[in-house]
Image (tube, rainbow, N blue to C red; front, top):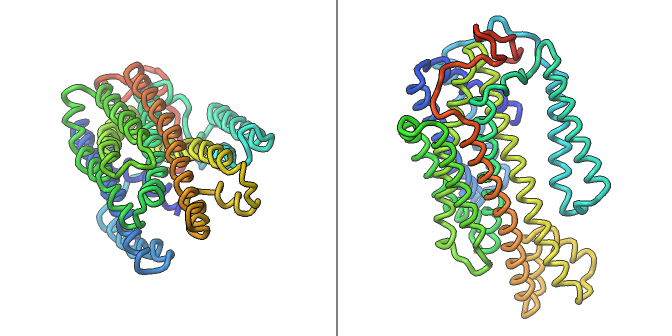
Amino acid sequence: MGIGGAMMMPSTLAIITNLFSDSGERQRAIGLWAGTTGVGIALGPIVGGLLLSRFWWGSVFLINVPVAVLGAVLALRLVPESRNLAALAPDFTGALMSIAGLGLLLWSLIEAPARGWTSPLVLAVGAAGLATLALFAAWEHRSSHPMLDMRFFRNRRFSAAVASVGLVTFGLFGALFALTQYLQFSLGYSALQAGLRVLPAAGAIAVVAPLSTVLVRVVGTKVTVAAGLLIIGGGLWQISTASAATTFAGIVVGIIMLGGGAGLAIPSATESVMGSLPGDHVGVGSAANGAFLQVGGALGVAIIGSLLNTRYQDIMSGALAPFHVPHSVMAAVLGSIGSALGVAGHVGGYLGAELAHVSKTAFASGMELGLEVGAAVAMAGVVIALLALPSRENGHQPADGDETGTTREATGSQ
């Protein structure tokens, strides 16, 4: 599934960029492209929840098989062919180094709450991940056929835009990770009901993304991307104020703000990325945009989730310390709020009700910490966008600063 997505998503943006050379048309096309993300976010939880309420868990995977087959048939019949005839050999070394570096870093972030942030293993693996990513950057800089030409990052229109895309998904994906648990375990909704309540965010993306081109035309890319990140930060902060007693009405405004901000920022930043590179490099530009989008989301889930779990476990450990709870029961309670509520239901009575209340309070506190950090990251993105992104398109920019705008080939995978 990951390989298929990695092959497909960069190609979609590259095709759009090749089909629409006019910046205005390209912006509108990318806005529609981003709007389909909102449709996917809306349909995924709803269809998934509907299937889970009637069938076994594997149905959520099988439902996509006919969709994939139909998509493949339509792509073969309708999508125009395009390729880089001068493409170089694939950079397998760079690919393996990037996978290893990101994998090690994400593992350390995810395992930190369970093993401790000062655990020698967590610190060693995290340091190894950062070191591997540094080696990856050095390899790409020196390679004759890099997976990603590092000179592209000298162009602020490219580097600030891909960073903005990553910061958007950091907050969006991290918030959705926390919200799905909050809706089901704290507010008591079923999987389908929780999916329906994420619909406002998805609907906001679907509506706002195609309209973002209007705001870009009026105020420019810089302000549009910064406004999107600012709205996301505000949405994260609003949701972070939720407590164990908060109802869905108390967080729906923040949910809508998350979708609206993403709908403004993602298509605007993406168009900046795709419009900053020469035509024979749109494939690598699209791949870089997709990579930062996915890495930002993965880091958001890992970091916001880790902070949430760390505070949750600290509060639960302190609350249960005087009661000498058996190790197996304590491990279940600390594992997740879902497991804690399961134990509470098994215990029953006053003690069960108290355990359920404490676990919901601890989860809300952990979500507050995680989303506040997400809001701070979004605010940092606002500063980056305002300082680094150009307001208007100045045409395709040479990646290495030469006058002709020619660059060496940056990818063999296009």
